[in-house]
Image (cartoon, rainbow, N blue to C red):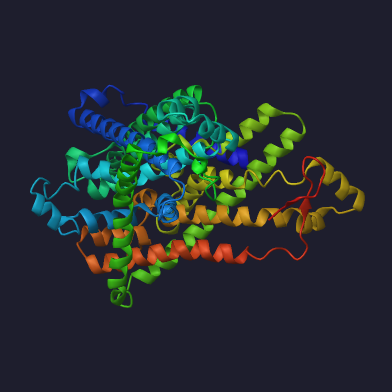
Length: 539
């Protein structure tokens, strides 16, 4: 039923888009000057952002792998992980506080005399924000791939004294190459479908993208046919890119691990000496300069905006609205993820690999269908019966649940297969079945992954601005929408308080779910190792 729901809604939304756009000609995209300019700018900014993010992430990841013990490494890794989950409008708030016309860097810019005052707005600002978001993601995944090399390989490389070029060809490039196609596709898709960043830093019609044009066609012009054409164009480009990437890039994981693995550079490396000390320091200081000031600016401005919190009449209703919608979307995403993965395992146990792959692939559908495209299709599909008010928010919850589905599946994929065949046989022999098996054998190993998946899903929903901007009401905003209204109205203190509250809610969700699942079960379960020894303690 979960697969039918996911596939039905996905294919139904696509069918509604095709039906609505049947009278439009695709040639409008290059014959209409405005649409052609929007398409060119969308492709250009996404390509430039991807090239810079991936290109700069490679030396950063190599420097982090080569320097496993420098002071501040753990803080830098945590900042990289924080940039993955922080809502986009909070990051934008920090970027404006640092790079804005009256930001922290304004005196330095005036002293240098070389930077224009409004470099944060337009193409340069969009690319800067995309690099801020995607460079840490790319570098973190590359570092994870480098650290997966076996210690024996690094020990042998240290004993042989391999130079930088040989290490790159023999160890580093073979680990990075399979990751690059899918990573580039992921970063391009994120930049291509970016909405909040372009809406905030676009600076005018010359910097409009397909996502923003789709929003304007739906929200202001009520031109559903044009919105359908733009959505289908966006979908066709993303789908083509992912098909090419999947055909060339193998199947490496694109999920960041819970903690850094074994430092690959703990063995003596010849390439870590000499000039590498300066070049590595250059890349690591550059990464810190990109990440840390905006994050610190959010905290500083938030503390300064604390007196505004009690006076924010719309702040607390917006917070309650955001939290309720995030909780509903998180539970929905979690239920779909568990159902799809349980169905996949059931099919695998019955030796149906193709059906199992189809079951799991259904949950990844949202990776190639941007959220705004998916929401537009559902809106067209439900339009005769879709009113306003709570129905619009229900649609937002549904789309947010689908948005978080691939991430939730990635988190709980390793824990859901459950008991191994010998464990199941032993449980059957002891008569441990039904709720007793779920309570004593399966729940202890599932509860922490489920809590982490729920936290990720709620965080994505808490920070969503694209779908809520289309279907929400400005009179009853969520926290991201309220923050966008305050930034657009130059209400800096109120925006600081809203950003701080949104950030606190994200941290509270993770802390509360971690606290609830921290204590181990009263009866620990020890799984058997491959050799049959009970040496692996499960969570």
